[in-house]
Image 1: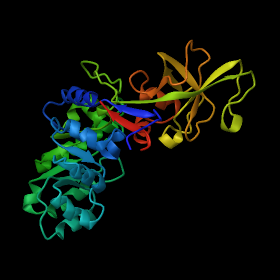
Image 2: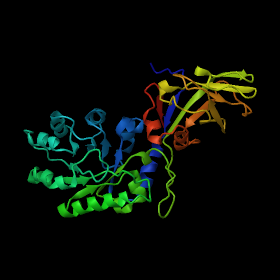
Image 3: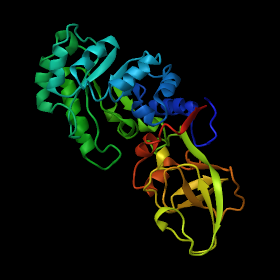
Image 4: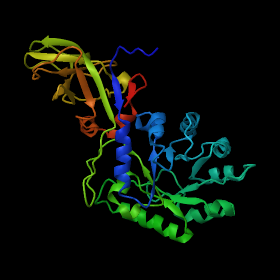
Length: 359
């Protein structure tokens, strides 16, 4: 059934995605810039995003095997790297069958690779812990890791790591991570990958044979490079409609827990979106939305299907009017600040009951 009466939608601008990719990759023209589409392409829809980008990107990156298989079943045949690596021995065998690139970060994974009846001959990414302290071989373990590979596999390795603080331009740790990986790369004379979105934008010395472009593919970061300001476009506009209007007297409350009471005669609009759709329940009073060319503040507590907005100051508001939660007119980064979170979380938590419309 294709009928949708509820107009709570995530409008995905595929042209914006391609535009953003091309904008950012001009900063690293000598690298192959991989599009990271894990977590359903940061909430944008991995299959549709992959189809729109497959003619401009060299490869895709996902979190784990299930995400890669969904892309293969949808006809995506570009290289796909598993950022978390194989999670069991069977994943290694399937990676050969599905032509996936493996990222390895511990010796157990190397043992799985060694037991395969058919040797793995694709790109083999060895992750090094240069300071993130999550996954990766310690630098002093790399000699043993490389030695465990076949001579053919050793020719196909990509040494990689992940920044912990690349957005903090005055943090000396980033340079230390760059220097540590560069030393190992020089020793093995191999390809490498280090730069994420912030690395591509701010740290040109981190540009490698491969860069991993994630969040900046989807949303402007208001980031200035050393020479210019990037012209990035938000790829998602989250919107809904006004389904109720109510006039309140002084002292009247709104929503569960009566956490907000009118301090003046007020007009309240009820919007068809809530935490069941992924709009965070912890959104504070004052979190903005965009209605008819103006900002208006949220009041009351977010419920499963609805939020309430104070539209007293707006001149002309009617049932059915479109409300933008974030997107073209209201940056998701702005909303994230009101919620004490980050743009990544807001984009990726949008639930499947929010219709995604591609243009």
